[in-house]
Image (cartoon, rainbow, N blue to C red; front, side, top):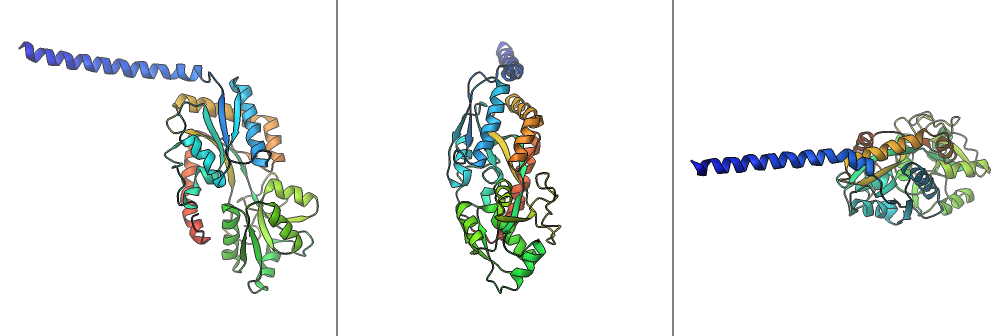
Length: 331
């Protein structure tokens, strides 16, 4: 009889100990959020120092420093189109002290553009908050007589395949190929690594059109060098309210919205993720943030971690089809 009682008591004791452990663990979560952060936070940036993306990320880092009360150090880790910075965070300790602010490619759809990405953006990242959205813009040489998207399409159709466009990264290529497909014209893709050379070729007449990020294009347009024909977003951008969309220009379904967002390593405690998200929502609501983003050709893009997770999954699904349409091969 005693032998039967002792195992039961041991089992009961074990269950009590397990319950206490869970209780202690759950009780520590609010304390974890309250104590965070207790040291400096690192934010990885996948772009070179001094560029538009770097400046934007440092703006958010400075705002985060003011709210968190801790130093926020931006570390530039360039290479592979921003993938290396995201990979570094995916492999970091999930304690909330290592973050990345990334564009959509490395954080989602680059799974279709690289044979060996080196990480799984869905499984190895903890979404924190979307931060900014921005259009790409269709531009031509301002000295050309082309004033609208319709003008460009009609011109391309008369060139018997001699039209060419500058290709810089995934989104500009996809937009150009979608435009060709819907507009029913042909154009040769000319690959570039940066925006300087294709802009010069566009101005010299070696290229007919290209898609650029809005901040770079606005500066060139203000100098009278380039003409902006359309924005890539499905509705008009508050940054360029007088510029029509590609859809308005007669290309139904041709649209893409680019974005920046903040991520931590997967496994980062939920209270820490929520605290970081709360800070970023405060930052996005500030007037000077709105002014800064507007000057950079972007709009605030507030949201929850769940919103960002949904965006990740939607982008990955959409780009599976877009990559096939654009006949893009994984690097």
